Image 1 (cartoon, rainbow, N blue to C red):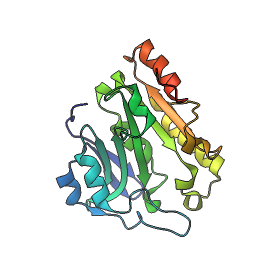
Image 2: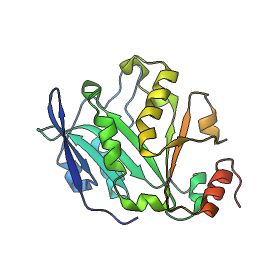
Image 3: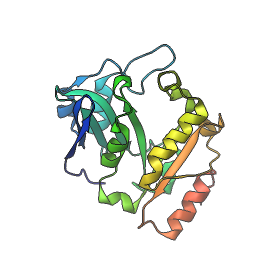
Image 4: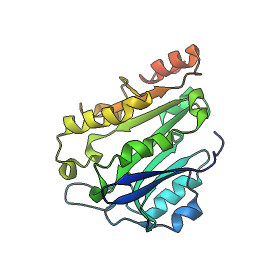
Length: 211
């Protein structure tokens, strides 16, 4: 996937405006402040505790790092779309045929403002996604159950509610890490231009069968 142009939308919240900015560059990210909320809490650790991790993700070919920014250029949310690593089964579908929504996280003090669903919209803005399969993996041990006051099943339902409007569906798989807990979740979005042949291959890859 080619690196698309930057796009931005402004979201009005109860605490002021938040800019949702897609396809941020490493240089741009390095100039922003990083919310201290993205750290280690009593029962939860943020996916990325350092801003530098986002810079590295933004430097990867074809990636899309989308940020939620306050008027003070403070990062209060991030979404990351990137290709799977070479040791993951999803790479077997073919070069640049699958991408993962690797992260979608909002700072604790900025939640319930529709930031996450708007970030996801910006993560998926590139029209080339219709030529591939986008997926997300939800591992229950990474969820902020304490901060959201939800059970694992309730959090799972919340993720499905966030991703479903964008064409994601829940799929079964025997991928070992996903199968470790019943609450874990695998969802995929099949682009409208993906051939029947690749869809069939995707079905078998989910169960570790490589044709």
